[in-house]
Each structure stands twice: as C-alpha cells, then as structure tokens.
Length: 293
Image (cartoon, rainbow, N blue to C red; front, side):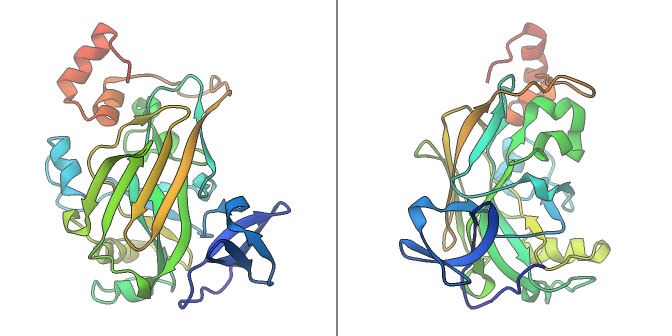
C-alpha cells in the first residue's frame, strides 16, 4: 500500500536490505519512518514516487520548438513511460554497448496527490502532492521504430531518474522556477517556467479530462533546448530551484539487444532529434555514412 503523503515534509525513498523504505533527509542523515537513521552519503536512493502511470509531453518549451524550427503546437501531445523506467538519485544509467545516442532531458516532475478526473484549470494545482527533478532519458537509436510512441526510446528500465526528494507542493511555485541540466559540471540546458507554452496546471487539466490520475502518478512537463547525447562515464545532473539536484552517472551495459523486433539503427530521425539538426542535413549525413554523435 502506498503511504499517505505528508504535505508538510519533504520525502525520500531508499533501498535498505533489498526493500524500499520511506523517510526524510535531515542534513547528513536520512531518518526512515520507523526511526532508523542512515548516512546520507551511503544511502541507496530510489525514486520518491510509486505511480500507477507516468505521462510525458513532447514539446512544451519554446526554446525546444525554436531549436527544431518546428511549428508551434496548438496543444500538447503526450506519451507514456512504464513505472519500471524509474531510477533514483546517484544510481547509474545504463547505456547498451552498441548504442550511440543516449540523450539527457532535464525536466520538472509533478506528482499527483488527490484523484483527478475532469478537474478544471483553476483547481488543477490543488491536486498536486509535490514536485521533483527528473531526467527523461532517451535512446534515439530506436527512434526509427517508435516515433511518437517512444516505448523503446524512453521506456527502458532506469530511463527515468527522479529525485532526490519529493518536495511538497506548498514549498514550490510551478510558475516561477529555473531549470538547469549539467553534463560533467557544465551547464547544457537552462530555462525558466516562463519558457513553457503549456504550464503545469494546463497539462494536468488536459490529461484529467480523459484519464483518471491517481495519487502518486507522475507527469513529466517537458524539456528545453539542447538535449544532447551522453557517453559512458558522463555525469549528468538536473537542478531545479527549490527542488535540489538530481545526479546520475552513465555506465556501459554489456547487453546484446539483438533478437526479435526492431534493432538499434542510426536513422535520419535519430540525428534530427538527438542532435537537433535539420532533417535534410540528417538525411544527407545518413546517406554519406556520417552518423557519429
């Protein structure tokens, strides 16, 4: 059974003796709900959520639309990530050894606190439990296979680091924040809430018109410009003002993804999305065999 969210406290979720445990961070210590204390530096973080569903949105930041020279979407469009994609703070992100285009995407995650169905725009934010940093990782070597569905691209195990804490809604203003993504210490993405075309309340109200959102469900609200590929050894961090900094390291995964179904492939769509280059240039590069990141 999912714990009742305490709106007065920040919450963490960690692994202890192979089991998930809820608690709070108190300086250099994590205090679990049963009083057990752990050194924060040694904690094995899990994502501080237990959703039935995870929704993500395709384009919401103006900077990303402009980067792709795309048409401004009249309304948001969404895709679904499975809960098995969740990952925790300081946990590794695994990159299959034959993949080339594993991209970071720093995002604001919204966690539902009360059941939502047909909730109005004005009332949407009152149903939020809290907020957290997220990294909506995508392996674009599968872009030719999934397109808008994003199942292979973004649904793989561990492709959604989220945390480090779940911050109560009362402590965060979703219309006034700064988001930054760092790669090996350098800022690679930066945006404010003012860059959103479709704000948090709009996305919640839109989704709840047609889908019942349950407590714990997660909505990923989009990423700004400059999502780019990572490589093994890279350290990627997502920082949102008031929510802390989520840190993960990319590790090579010695796995053979060959078998039934679509195979890894660098297509023109891979280069267009992963590197934000024009589609005609992407097609030329593929035709010429110039497909390195």
